[in-house]
Length: 354
Image (cartoon, rainbow, N blue to C red; front, side, top):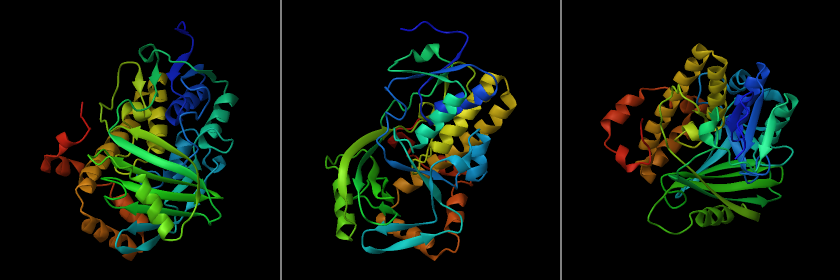
C-alpha cells in the first residue's frame, strides 16, 4: 500500500465525479492526486454513448456544466432535438423539442470521449494520476470509486451501421423489466442497451431488443457486447467526515432513467467546496442534489408500477404535447414526500435511506 501523501488531496476514482472535484480543487490552488484502479482513464467504460440530460436541475445544461468549472462548448457532443418512443402494439412516435432533450457524449478511452476531455483539463492543471491502484478509500479525502452494490443491471452492445443519426427509446416488460431500453446511432456507430431490475426470468432482455429493432428495419453489425450494474442508494447528503462520497459511490444519480453525469459533476463540485472550506456553497448544491434524487426515487416507484397500458397513456401525452421537454422538467419539480408516504413499496426496492 502506498504511503499517504499529506500534502495532496487524495481522490479515489478517475470518473466524471472524481475529475470534476479535482478540477475545482486545482483551480483553487490545491495539489490533487487521483488513484484509479484501471490502467487508464475511461477503462471502466465500454465506448458506449450516453446522454447529458437537460431537464432535471434548476439551471440549464450549459450553465450547470460551466458552474462545475467545465467549458460546455468544448465538450465533444451531439445535441438531440428529437427521438422516437416505441411501445409494443403501438406505432412509434417522434418526440421533438426546440431545445435539446440531451447531448450525446462518448464514454471510454477514445480521444473524443467525455472522459478524455476531462482528463486533458486535469493534465493542464497538473493533477496527478496513479493507475492500477486499489488505494485505501478510508485514507482518502474523496471517494469516487463508483457503485458498490447491484440493484439495476445493464446489458448492451456497440455496433457499426450505415444508418443516419437517430435515438430510440423502447418501453415494455419484454424488453426491459421495470426499466427501459434505448438505441443511439451517432456518426456510423451505435449503442443498444437495456437497463432493468432483476427478475426471476433468466433470459437476457437484450436479445428481444435487438430483434425488435431489426424487425422494424434497423439493421446493424454488433462489434461487442457489454454489461454493467448500478445501485439505488440514498445516503445522508451532508457528510462531515472523510472520505466524502461522490458520484455513484454516494448514490448521486437519477433513479428513474439513470442519467447520472450532472449528478456526478455537481457532487464533485460540492465535495471541492467542502474541502475548500466553503460550506455555504456546498450546502446549496447538496440541497438540490438531495431534492432531485428523492423526486427521481418517487418517479421510479411510480414508473415500476405502470402497466404497459399506462405507459401507452404517457407516451400519448408526449406525442400530443407542443413542449414535451417541459413535461420532463415538471416531473422533477413536485412534492416527492406524498408519494413516499402513500406507498408501502420501499422494502421491495434495493434502496435505503440513512
